[in-house]
Image 1 (tube, rainbow, N blue to C red):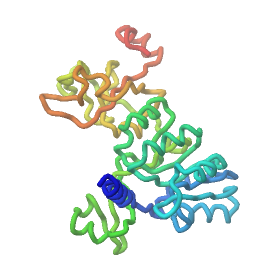
Image 2 (image 1 turned 90 degrees about the vertical axis):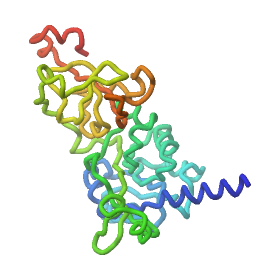
Image 3 (image 1 turned 90 degrees about the horizontal axis):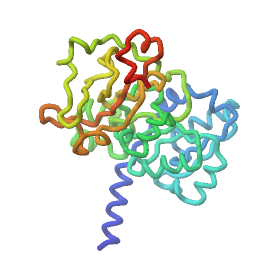
Length: 302
């Protein structure tokens, strides 16, 4: 019975991980990193020879834009944790791929262990995983050039099932007559790109508008419903949606942690008894000119 159960779980995992990235999406994102790819060995360790990632980098190699392209993995290839895959990882400079979502944590841990630069795709929920969030908090990982809130389209083995089980423009979309799975996925990287977040213009005022910034039931600070509503005159702790991370500029803000790290009961934040989706707790950084102009900031300046 345990063996049968293990096989069923593995089959389910493989099925759930069969999301194949479109060539145009790879080209669109990777084009922002060409200067970093130049004369480097690129490793696609979750791909087989017919992968669009491999095809894209073979094209770059033919143009003399990268040194070499290595690949292994995929559903019919080597596991990224195998000894052979790890040896190839050691030989490479940059890893670019779409790893299995179900194995994202061990995958990202391996990249960190071997100190690799990477550009990978992950489910948006991955940013709230402890291992991933800590990298974001420490400015060792950030969002790629595509906005965090945008979904991505993928090819899947049995797209017709999406018509029966899904909802158009929510779980699938039809593009050029082909059914594509719509997935809340995002590019994650530790390579600098041209769309690195600039400072968010702060135009909202907290003082006099306190009712627009309610305090949490289980933590004594304020909720900011969206990043454009971050007030310029509040220097305490604020809870913001996870979509904040694609505008996170460590020169402007400090990420303190996830809401559960701070709430009195160790649970997600609540307002009026209603549970909210995961919040990131942040605090503004202020410069000395701000402090000198307002003595009230002296206690909270960082």
